[in-house]
Length: 302
Image (cartoon, rainbow, N blue to C red; front, side, top):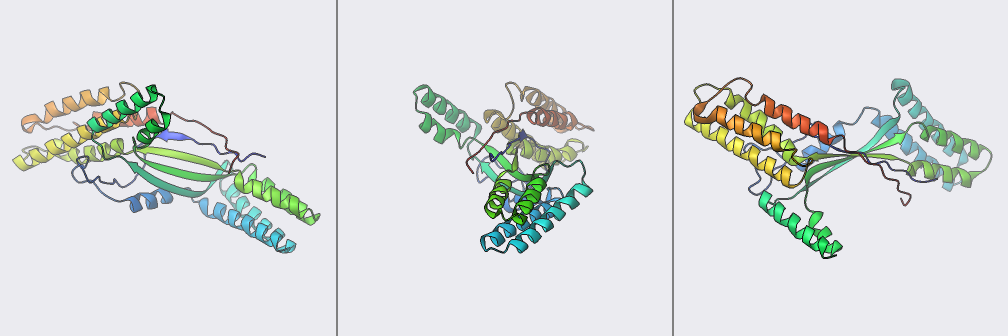
């Protein structure tokens, strides 16, 4: 039986995460921190069924330990508890195919400027053309600015069946077979990966900050300067996202066109309700388009 891991890659800005800052020109006004906050919030976003799923895995591990120590009755008891935990999940969520049990996140964030990113891409392309794959790989691996969230799930169609099968094997003194079934169950998990592009996320936060100023009549000189800085920062994040190719060819063109409209409407103290609304919608449309990109892989090595 193979250890099947399905990887679902979705580029999405629809996550409520804190925005990390860069110690360079990529910083925007009012940007928030930190990595710890992002990871904590990522964990909080997991379905409440996580508790029972974790308990079921813990009981499976206890059962294996008990079998290794020739405590077969304790192993059966642990499996029955694990089965009970999953039955609770299924009773509360009868259509739930996957029960989450773990979520981790990591941030990969290049500090390069848009021009620096472009030069790195060109260098990597030249190396590939020269047949220097590994040298190009060392460059490409750093061309990212994103939060990667990894959520692990128990497949509810197969995991409880495996626990019941193992318990039946133990009762017929087929302990080694039971151990194999349990080990395979623990290694047959579904992993969903969500990639959140930070340039898009940061731009969205900056748009929200700029909205109030863009709608304010009689802005002061200081407020006009603040709004200009926010728009500059949005342009920078757009440029970084485009150079990092978060989106297909021309994906950022409508956003850049709308940015020109926003600047025209807010120039010389201009204001109005909903000036930033279309820009926000365009970012949402880009996120929705990107989230359609999925792939699955099979891994029999872990």
